[in-house]
Length: 458
Image 1 (cartoon, rainbow, N blue to C red):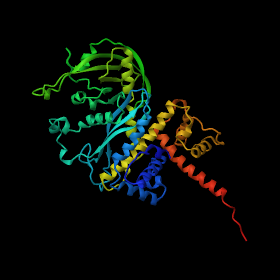
Image 2: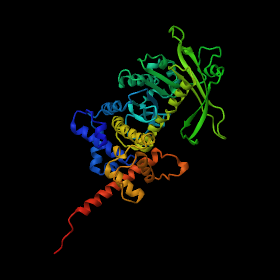
Image 3: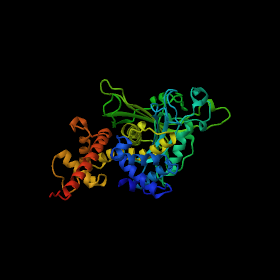
Image 4: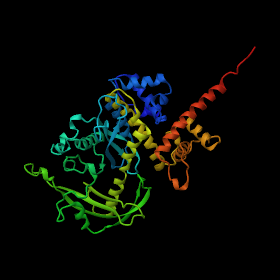
């Protein structure tokens, strides 16, 4: 099983628990959309899963640590590695019996928050989680945003970005060049001021109205005074109400200094922070489309158009963390889990974290290495059944390429494969995996029946 290899270093204090984790991850990955009883195949197996998540010896940190060991094995020899951070809300409002949850957007919404760091290579293939922190907000914090703004960073939720940066550096081998990528929520002074080890850099989408040391005072105005350095094309992923397309972006960049927050200037003697600012802007968007406009701050030097293009390309990989969280919620249906308390949910989330990565990796890997044999990720019996089901013919002697197999899986999941459809996405892939699991089970049962001795009479 691939899960045994992925989690081979797990230490849960009991070999049976280690084995149960691998079996559970394998079953959930085969049928990610299914309920736990459906995915595990029987009520007895489902009860074993629930007992596993109820066991205090099962540590979410131990599960993720084993996965992280395998992430290190997948790191490319030549960096840098992109460490993409983001936070998502997990909503269990419809499960009022679950204890230990906190408020989300308002007092009527309850659940947990998860801050994840996903490692990816420069081609946009997700390598796995480097860190994940899950927490519940305390009820006394509701409605006190104005007070929270006066607290030090260590006492606020924004501290999670700094802690995730430290966890990222600790998770990677010494000397690994790593670039932390994040959206505008990570654009705050203390993150840029946090000491980093050699080879650790930041690439953050900035707030255009943030203060800088410049005659124009604000970042957007300062960059507008810079000349356009040239243009380049960037692939823009599909978004809500926006089709995928290639955008031509014009780049401006300059070295700037970030000014300390006005609320903290008195007594703290905070230093200005030198960074590179980049504006990548679409000057002629298609009719009816909002122009792409990214303000970026990086601790890496940028002195040429090629270097600016590299930063913009790396930032464009940030969509991977959004897709990862989407797979976790929509693909793995974690918000439908009905468990008694938040501690059990945390163990289940750590289990599903590996499943969600696997689904996303399979989709991206098929695009980046389409000619790799599919039997490295799909069992021989399964890809042969897949070929029979989709192509209506006997399978070839050798395993087809990964791209061929993934498109076959997607066709099982409803992908039409028309020219305008492009490559299949995660949704059709996990639907196909679920159908393939059922088909493989049926084929194996039929094979067993055909090999059985014919009945005798008389």
